[in-house]
Image 1 (spheres, one colour):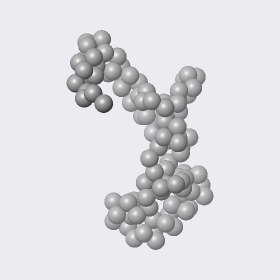
Image 2 (cartoon, helix red, strand yellow; image 1 turned 60 degrees about the horizontal axis):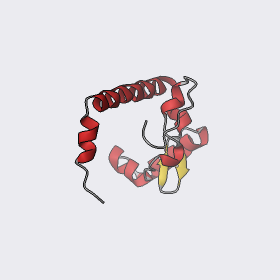
Image 3 (cartoon, helix red, strand yellow; image 1 turned 30 degrees about the vertical axis):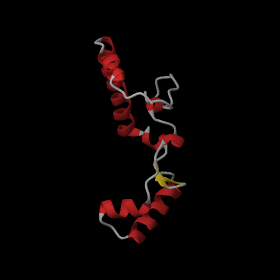
Image 4 (cartoon, one colour; image 1 turned 180 degrees about the vertical axis):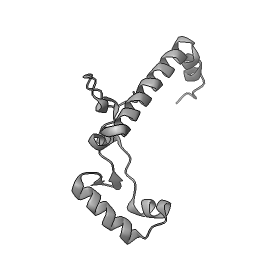
Length: 108
């Protein structure tokens, strides 16, 4: 897991979702531009989503709370992805790739 990611260890699907405080907010204007929608439409829709708890306004924009990400098929996919990443980095470490990679980092 990346630094700061929450893992409760109880096997629930949401164990591998990073804490909301670590999530990077997206500005409403960015959402509007990327989706090709008017800013007012995005504002109205995100207000409705926020009222249902599906997104949250935070400093800097909008996030999708971890509890929402952990639900349903997306939560299953996130958990499977986290497990695959863990296996990948374990294998890379056993092969010595991570040690070489760390040796390539410039000194501060």
